[in-house]
Amino acid sequence: MSGNEATADKVKALIDPFNKKGVTLSNDTTFAGDLEWDSLTVMDFVAEVEDEFDIVITMNMQAEIENVGQLIEAVDSLNG
Amino acid sequence: MAENKDLLSKFDPLIQERETLLSTGVMDPYAIVMDEVKSPTEAICNGRETILLGTYNYMGMTFDGDVLQAGKDALDNFGAGTTGSRVLNGTYQGHKECEDALKEFYAMDHAMVFSTGYLANLGIISALAGKDDYIILDIDSHASIYDGCAMGNAQIVAFKHNDSEALEKRLRRLPEEAGKLVILEGVYSMMGDIAPLKEMVAICKKYGAMILVDEAHSMGFIGENGRGVCEEAGVIDDVDFIIGTFSKSVGTVGGFCVSNHPKFEIMRLVSRPYIFTASLPPSVVATAATSIRKLMHSGNKRAHLWENSKTLHKGLRDLGFNLGTPEAQSGIIAVIVEDMMQGAMLWQALLKNGLYVNLARPPATPQGMTLLRCSLCAEHTVEQVQKILGMFEAAGKEVGVI
Image 1 (cartoon, rainbow over the protein chains, first blue to last red):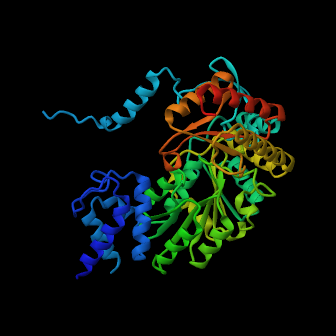
Image 2 (cartoon, rainbow over the protein chains, first blue to last red):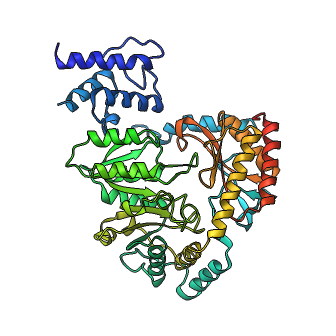
Image 3 (tube, each protein chain N blue to C red):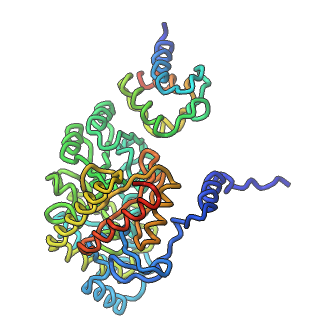
């Protein structure tokens, strides 16, 4: 399994508890639009992702991340 | 010809929300006018005698006789305004005296006076942290802190409110060689809670981060000499910068930064919000300097303010209101209500009974909450505090909050 796939599986597992509407996830699923997350949910979720991968996703980066695929790419790039 | 895109249409949801609220007949909570102000604790609002419980005038210096006289003298001797920047023709002897008073008040080497507290945060933060530096801040930080971060294009890392472990995790994960500024507030003005500064400052030191503490809501009141939560926590010598304002305990308007950093004076030449705006009028810096010097010796007033805050907190809790902190931690007591509608109803009922409090709503508030913020004054009498509790009981029952 490539790094990207392993990351994708972990990220999707982290989304699950926040996916209250049971939206089917793909790389194009957006956090604000499809998952309807508010800023508080985003904050809690980002903290989970940061702890899981031991990284920091700055607010500047967060502003650029709109969908699941972009998040997976960002996590991979931060993991070097 | 192409049709203009109306840039204001992005505000339509807010316009709609306001119209819905106001159509119920509730008064507009953001359009109140003080017709007459009689003292730090009383005004005439909408023709009615009103007790002020939402003005952050913690030490009641707005009508202090010495303060007023200093302002009048400066107005006579130096004119209505400076018409200039601090770095050009806008630094008068009064601005230097004000900075001297601050240095003495905080027992620090350097002080820099800005035109408002908002500009002090903007000016210091944007100059300190640039594109490649990291700012690590509490998620519930004041708007002026976020705006200072944005202005400097710094990399922003937020951590969960008042959570030392979350702060440490983020500091540990950042590149060791990167410049880091941790920004904390002594008192968080929405809930009135204080930061665990002793613990947090130790963590910052461990990871080599510089520390800025905004003491806007604690100056003059918290700490033995009124220097703020830093003083109370015994860490004032370990923080690099303290930001404050004249628009709360000092009782006028203006902002400042104090520091012991040996290179601090260069900030005057690199801080755009310091340079590219007019300096404070002579009367304002004269009132500020006089007030600051009086605040050095206000131990009794501090003690009375604590009494007021504790009495109001206990009284409101006993009445059954949901409060922002388990006990009184500052001069702010936040009453948490269900939503904007209930908040506006309670706010209006209180005002009609003759009490002004502050209605706060998202995005200013944490976690989407609506709050009625009460801020006490050292000039509130014991009787006034009891009267305030009676007004809260009546209004709370009328609206069905308690």
